[in-house]
Each structure stands twice: as C-alpha cells, then as structure tokens.
Amino acid sequence: MVATKNEIAGSLRASRAGALNGRMRAPGDKSISHRAIVFAAMAIGETSVHGLLEGEDVLRTAAAMRVLGADVERDLLPDGGGAVWRITGAPWQAPKRALYFGNSGTGVRLILGAVAGVGVSARFDGDVSLRGRPMGRVLDPLRAMGLQACDTDGHLPIGIEPNGRLNAIDYRLPTPSAQVKSAILLAGLRANGTTIIREPVPCRDHTERMLAAFGVMLEITTEKGERVIAMDGGQRLSATKIIVPGDPSSAAFPVVAAVITPDSDVTVENVLVNPLRTGLYMTLREMGADIVFENERMENGEPVADIHTRHSVLHGVNVPAERAASMIDEYPILSVAAAFAKGETVMEGIAELRVKESDRLSACEEGLRASGVNVESGPDWLRVIGDGHPPKAGARVKTHLDHRIAMSFLVMGLASQNPMEIDDGAMISTSFPTFMDAMFMLGAEIKNLPH
Picture (tube, rainbow, N blue to C red):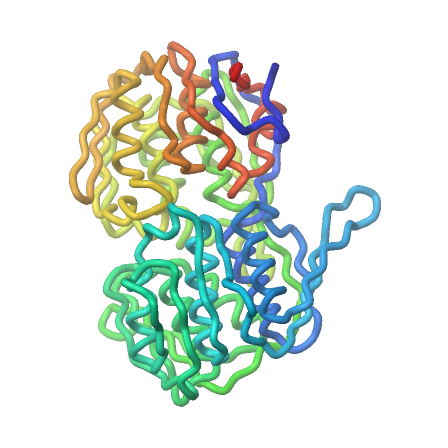
C-alpha cells in the first residue's frame, strides 16, 4: 500500500517507479512560522497568520505561547481554503509548568530570548534529542545582557529568573546563527539601550524582516564588511497580517527528486526565495540542474517564486564554506544529489551539522556508504564521489529520529538501482506533514513495510 500522511510512522521503502510530474505546494516555511507565532503573541492586538506550517515543532511553539498567556486560535477558512491562525498578544505570565518543546531547537532558542526580555521566570525542556543540543550559544549573550539562568550545564532543562530589565549589548556572532541572532533581538526589544549585532557572515534575516512588519524600527548597515543590525530597546510590536510562504528546505526534496529521476518535470509553487535561503538551488544549478524561478514576487517583505525543475545530468562541485549559512538544512539532500553526479562534490564549513537533530554528517556518510557510494567526512566537511550513474542503493538507513535524513534517503530510493528503506518515518511530520501525499501525487512510490 502506498504511504499517505496518516501512515508515515514505522519503516518505509521508496522505489524507482518512473518519472515525477506535476505541480505541488510546499508546506509553510518553518522558520517564518515559528517567528509569526512568537511575535504575534508579543504584539498588541490580533494577528492573523495564513499558510502556517502545522508541523509538530511549530505546534509546540503555539502551545508555549498559550501557556505564557497569549490567545492562540485556529479557524478553518470556507470552501477548503485552509486554516487561519489568530493570535492575540497579552502580558506574559510565569508558567506554572515547564515549557516543553519536543525536538524544536528553533522554538526553544527564540522563546528563551523572548521570555528573557519580558522578564518572567520560566523553565524550558525538550525531548532526549533536544536535551543533547547546545544552548550555551544562546545563553552566553543573554547572560551578558543580565539574564539569570540556573540548573543548566548549557543544555536543557534550563530555568531562568527575572533579574530586572536587561541591558543592550554589542555582540559579534562567533558563528552564523539566525536562532542566536533572533534570541538576542527578542531580548533586546525591552532592554535598556541599543542592541547591536554584527554578522561577519550573514545568516537568515527573517527576524529582521518580520520585526519590521510588526512595526519595529531597526537600522541595518555594513561596516568593515560585516552586516550590522541596530535596534533601540523599549519598542512594542503591533499586530498585523502574515502570509507564510512555502519552505525552501522542504521544497528541496521534490526538487532534487525531479533532478535525479529521468524524464521528470516538477513545479513547486509559492516557495520562499530569500537569497539567504537559496544556497542549495545555486549549488544545484552549478552542478548542471535545470532549475528556474518563475512568477517571482514579494509577499510580506519576502521574495517568493514557483520553482520549476526538470531531470538533469549533474557533475560534482566544490561548495564553499561561506555558503553554508544559506543552506545548512539542505546538506543531507544535497549529498543525495551528489551521489548521482559525475565527479567529486566537496562540502566545507558544515560543523553545525554535527549538532542538529542528529549528527547529520555521520548519518549522511553512513547511509551513503551503505548504498554503495564513495563518501568520506571530517569534522566540518563531507566529500561525495559519484560516477554519473544511479547508486546501487538497496540499503536500510537509520534516520536517528531526524526528519531530513528520513526524507533525503526516501528521495534517493526513487531514482536508485534498488529501493531504499528507512527505519522510521514518523518524525517527517516535524517539518513536512504532507510529504507522502505530495510525493505520491507526483508519481513517487513510497510504501509502508510490515511491522
């Protein structure tokens, strides 16, 4: 039986079944969805959010906002028009129980900054995987602003206590991280003075764009080659309407599937094409992929387009370290594309993959090697050498409870010589709850395996 969104738990097998063709819409962008809910919960008045990603991570963020005191409601639009989320901000109150984030690193880091700025006590926790991910990178600048954090070794669980109004800081990001930048800006909204963030390497700017949409004044300049963001404290957000574009990280899976599957022709509609998020598409074009952005437009201050792609013959490339910030979540699916390319693809500056939902560098290397691909990795690099033909595959891959590893190797199975299996697909709903249905409609063959 072909898998659907209601049947993604358990082991799955993807097999070669012919060309992929058609049009689809990617789910709402996860980064923007998190921010829309948090900012709306801090704003004065009611904000409506259309196109929100209703994946598990974002729903955890919505639940946290309710616990803190915001009114968060979901209404169905008439005539099958989807859902609109209505969030009314309110003064935040110290929650009586821990804020639980499951596996959502974005949610917990953003809300750490927001709660620190508001000045209420709270306790943060998550699942086993999230407890293993580093939080010191967020706590260090927040402590410099005056936050009192306790019961932590730099990992969850974390308790924070009000310690008076925070003070603004001038902070240079040691590594590109939109989550750290966002936490500092959210804390700085009500801090004394002007918060300044310096980015030697620019990272996702959704927070700056959305803060402006909520009426916050920021100044963005360039100094000595660095992007500099300055924001005065004491500002309040005003409610607005947000339309969430499609997630380019989720769109990457059907796009790469079309690129590696002969005779395929696929269009993914309404995708965010912010230049700080399109590193994968730039890289695929350099590898020879036929990818075109059509119907380009602006929505809520963000560039959006339909991504049209066809099957292509790929060749290996070097992916520079400075591009990593614009495609950090896409390296697993890029490694799959590289396995179909002729020649060597080298990805550098990607140590961040070691501390994602899993050690994604190790997971990619393990899955590719089991599929007969020539691959090796180092502390912050991955090298994939393809011969220009579909890999032998036929492996069963451990996903390590990582949604992007799961989807990447399912995509690989759609064009490999032999099917690919993954041990569990349940976590796919974290970011792409409609993945199975969407791929099935394009012609993919993905089946549940017997228990």
